[in-house]
Image 1: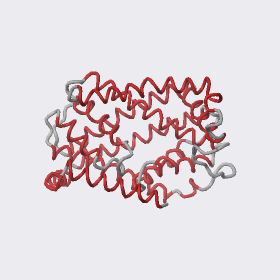
Image 2: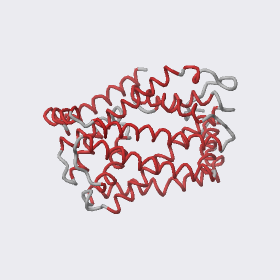
Image 3: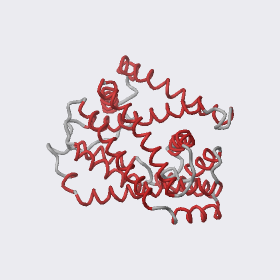
Image 4: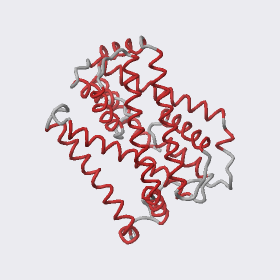
Length: 326
């Protein structure tokens, strides 16, 4: 408990430090002014696109579960996903929302490994497509991103992940039991096997990657509407190059919900396209506002539909978060 509180305090401190370093009081005040004066119609459109993103991701989750013979109603999974948005926003990281989804869906799955594996498959395919997208962007817009010192590390890191993940997944499926040996507990191996089976299933692979790409395009569209709401002139190239890189960096577990990292990344990458720092900060705060609005909507869904989260089709079981212990 003390360690968790220390990590939370450190992340809050890093977030505050990054905000002070990249933003400062003057930029923050101007960004807030732009946000307050935003046009409501495109802002609502951006929020609706965010909701569509959850609808699309729910399809992917349902497909992954279906590859293991688990049939859960789409509407129920959507409510689970919306409730997880609330926990994502109001807990220190997205782990809270993922654990909530594990707990909820475990009530409708034959074993815990399938429940946890479906979350890993969902998260993993989304992150893989995001990283691969960033690799393509860095290769195509090398000079625009800042040349060797900026695009170089991005290419190296994303290429290692993009090429390494398929190889690692193949090796685990082919030699997993012998490779793991006694280093992983049986519970962890069952979870990893379930996740690998869901991702490598033909339907899981096709739908997982395709829907992840569609979700990235929806995020780009959401940011475009947000820019329209804030009267920020953004080209589609600026959005398709900058936004995935910003969101990828914001997933780094160094601050709370990417606060500070997202602002600094928006300032740098959009600055390469001539966007003022104040406008970039306003866009970042707008993304945070949409995230909070989505979380609050998820909270309403969670409170309004308690029976959906407490009445399983079969006897409830408590999901376990995989650990490396023996």
